[in-house]
Amino acid sequence: EQEIETSLLTPIRKAAELRAAGIKAQRGILLHGPYGTGKSLVAYLAAQESLKNERTFVMCNMGMLGIAVHVSRFLQPSTLFIEDMDDFHSSYRGMSEIRNLLSGVENKVGFDTVTILTTNFLEKVIEADRSLMRPERIDALIEIRAPSQGVVGKILQFAGNGWVKEGDDWDHIAQLMAESNTTPAIIIEIMNRAKIAAINKEAGE
Image (tube, one colour):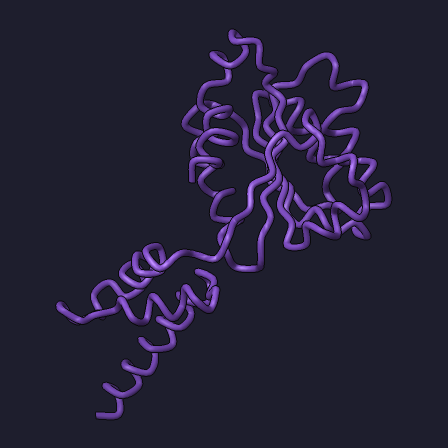
């Protein structure tokens, strides 16, 4: 949470202050972790903060990268979100296009664009181009992990709102889910299926 706040949200919220402190507005952040851990949810949060701070939010996949880069620069200040950057084959230029986006010659003029990339396969990205991992290309590498027991408990409360009986003890379930690295997407689906089963049982009665 602190990494997201410092490396992603603060540059979106405080771009003018960072420039005054000698920090360039253009930054690259790579979110990595397993499927369903919440990388896209971070994008939603970044989109909300961008709009609050009068920044254009552009979302794309690798196949749309070239167009999205031009749009985000034309409408700067902006936040550019690139989902599944490891999908190199959907763009004929692939990694070189991302490298130029983050630190190419034309970037020396200075764009006010915060670029957020995601991958489920960090090792695949590093294997394709290790040079991407240096600052001024990827300034922050943030792992979005499976949730801890405390966070699992909060997700269960959120997903079970109105369905969980008051006084029920969910700590043991939260502990088991955390120990098995259950992702938020799976936790919510488990709760949804429990609700469906309950509704089906009520309908049968």
